[in-house]
Image (cartoon, each protein chain N blue to C red):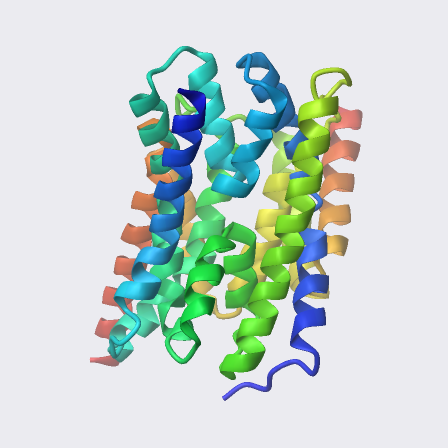
Length: 228
Length: 101
């Protein structure tokens, strides 16, 4: 049993803030994609509360802008977002001793950054977990609503090439290191990197999903042999 | 048509996030599965990093500055445990190496 933070809601909000840094320029890239697809600003922005997932929103509007059919654009966007199913499985044990409303609301803010925060700081106590998760999720949500609104308005008129796109992989390396608190987890991460590179040409970034599932299975087999 | 696409994608992405939370709400997770799930966070982060550094055609879109930036990030993250410091270390190494080259 781990010790929950003293003020889980405040902790969650504060932990979410630095993770938003790379999302800020991305919100402006999103604004440019909406403009280039010829979509009205309010309609483009409405995808932020309705979808709430940057990569999914950008994929959807990029394809619509290229003239893809609704079915093709929606399915490609959902394939990009398929990794969220892994988050749903991984967090399911933490959602068991929780009120039903939290399952509905919590699933809505289950994004990459909120998922990884909940894994870096595992909280077993249900009340503390719920407060931490919701505070982190809705801090990110609020910032994403504000920044994508600014992005659709300002993105097309100001230069978006800030030279800070590299902040995204940098942050995710930092998160990867924080999530790899054991040597075997670091080995799994290294394996996933190699596999993703090997599978990088698969359509709609499906390599991510395959690389994760394969490396998790390999680690499981390796662990079993060790303990046998 | 665009509104329809947004709504369908919204329903789909919500369903993907909610599905197992509801489907496994009363499921007793075997210890082997719980152990396997511990690897999801590090491997997803690793896979996302590589996917950001490769083109959709599978070409590596990173050179020496990127490599040095990411190594600096990993070292700073491991030694300080602070994401902002790791971000500063990684970006400085990346910009400085890019400027030298």
